[in-house]
Amino acid sequence: MARPAPSVGFALPTSTPIRERGRRNSTLPPPMLVTLDRHLRDVSGASPELVAVLEALECSFREVSLLLRHGLRTGGDAKHGSGVWQREVLKLDQKVAEIILAALRGTRTRVVALGTHEGVVELEGESSGNGIGLDAAPPAPAPAVSADPYDYYCAPTSPATSPCVRRFAVVVDPLGGDAEKADAGASSGTIFSVYSARAGGEEGGTRASVLRRGEEMLAAGYVVFGAATQLVLSVGRGVDGFTLHPSLGCFTLTRPQLRMPHTGRFYSVNLGHRRQWSEAMALHVDLVSQSKSLRYTGTFVADVHRTLLYGGVFFYPASSRRPRGKLRLLFQAAPVAFLMEQAGGGSACGAERTLEIEPGTLNQCVPVAFGSRSDVDAYVRSSAVHSA
Image (cartoon, rainbow, N blue to C red; front, top):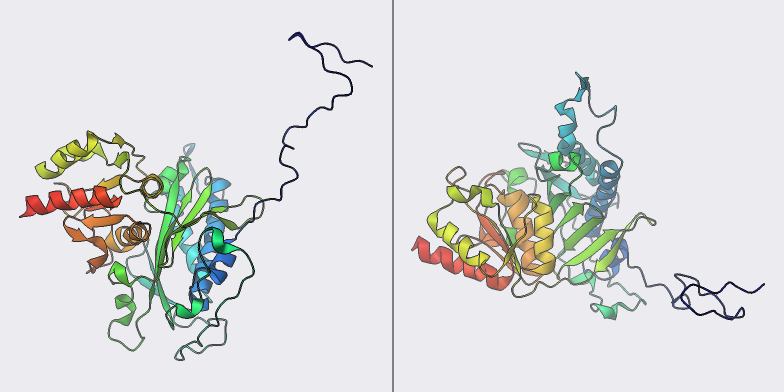
């Protein structure tokens, strides 16, 4: 039976095949998926013990993503009160902390500092699960050999070059104070960093394991829980971005070897606090605004992620209300500064490099700027001139 002529004024022969949508490239092989586990073991150069810690964190992030995606206000999470949900749901930060802590048990993690705790949690009695004694250094790992073509972003790096660490100290900011934003459906995030733990016999070894300069980090990263769950990670050899694959249920490499532009088109800052800044800071932000567009969500990890991807600069300056700033050096500023520098950017607290500052307390705050190298350098010069 002949087809009716379409209204556009021409007719196709009945023998003409109808092209199926979505089949244009059906003959091409699917792109190769590199999972986070495979990347860590074959390419990153991290030791097997550090890989185990990072894989445990990955498992906890998958669980947190599920928790956020399936809704926060369930009957088991909060109570009714005059038809309104009570503040119990805002304890989500604590729930995420518990998930991460449970995942790290069984790895070679000795100390965990959580942003929801006043102190640190010690896991001294936990088994590493690999038969290595707590006082014995682990054997040097053999170089990884992979037949997969990783040349499209970097040459495979032998894990034998990774430092031999007996135990680890992990610092985690579970939701970065964004639990209320997550409850409203906005993006939220988790920031983490990994150090080598101090020997148990050292005086104050538990606290000293985490009160360290950022340049001593072995690894750092963050997870953005939003429309997609994205993980950004560095083990000191550049920065890689991963996305939680909805079908596979694991993180896959989507942004290999991230590099920040030398300068960017955007700046991020809460202009609502402008009247509380110093005159010098207000003038510097006014100068930046003449050549850049404002982008600010109020979610720290989301703003940092955009800055890392597209360049520009993020400010959280000191103010009359918060003379030392708001961002915590240990939990927020230092890990992000590590990632920025690994991606070719920079970070500074006034005229001082963020990674060179040693925290005196767990919750020490600093005024800080992150971003493209040129934009941070301009901030540093401005800070140096006005502090002289």
